[in-house]
Image 1 (cartoon, rainbow, N blue to C red):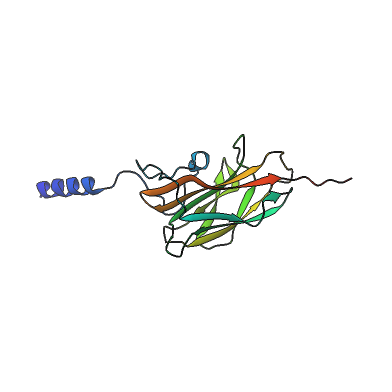
Image 2: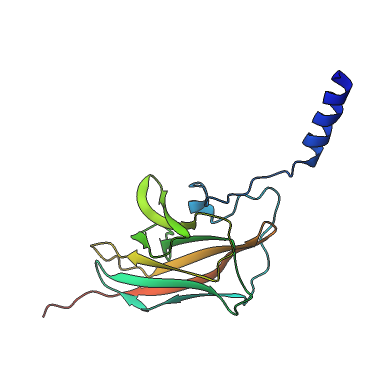
Length: 173
């Protein structure tokens, strides 16, 4: 009996894939690096399979910006997503997010609620929609909405997709 358990244990341990996937969403530690935690998986070369779209190219204080991530065709689906807004030069996470899809959720980066968007299941997605809220005080820096897209466990696109939003201030003269 002990020999059987030993062989079973060896079989199970050698069958386990190294690394971790995150079917319930990106971990908070991914906010800074934008990297998926999939073991030794390296990011893929950038691809035109996906697009990140915005309803605006500029933002004002307390503005709302609608962001859509989609496959270029109906066949270009993805399993995971990480969306973060960062200042262009200092790369500080800025603004907050809300979800409009049932298959995504907000993420609390740097212990600040709703500062990122991630998936909540590993189901195939053809698109997701989210809303980014600009801070009440506009920085003079442009904001970059960055996306990491997980097509599959071994196909991850990091920093391939982004949108730049130019800061605008209201002139009260």
